[in-house]
Image 1: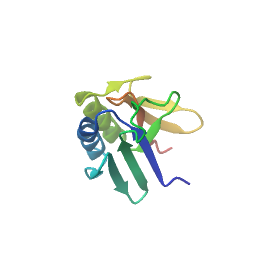
Image 2 (image 1 turned 45 degrees about the horizontal axis):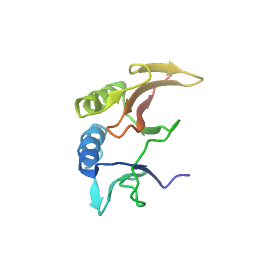
Image 3 (image 1 turned 90 degrees about the vertical axis):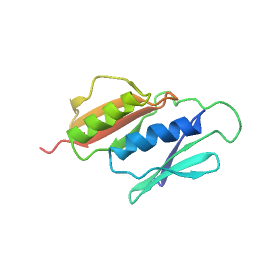
Image 4 (image 1 turned 30 degrees about the vertical axis):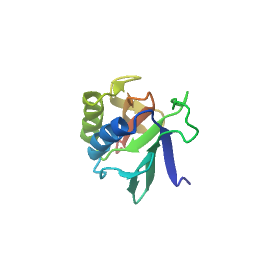
Length: 125
């Protein structure tokens, strides 16, 4: 259904450093830089961070969350720890199992620009 997800940043170099390290914990290669944007491309989709084209400040989406798949609970924990160590802040509950029809291990962060992001591992039943 989706081809890509793009979020905004006010500091492209800082965002690249943060996401290169964060997404590296999930086995994703460092970003490709294209003018005012960075791209992380995989077989399952593209994640991008961009300075706003209209020149206004980037702001996080209220109620929005970007979720990244983790292969294990340990990978989600490494993702979370790497995010905290590189300028992210934890949000919601601490990383852990949540149940709502499907058992999932979730770890939530806010990136340095305030965007809400999550690592999700579907726990086998």
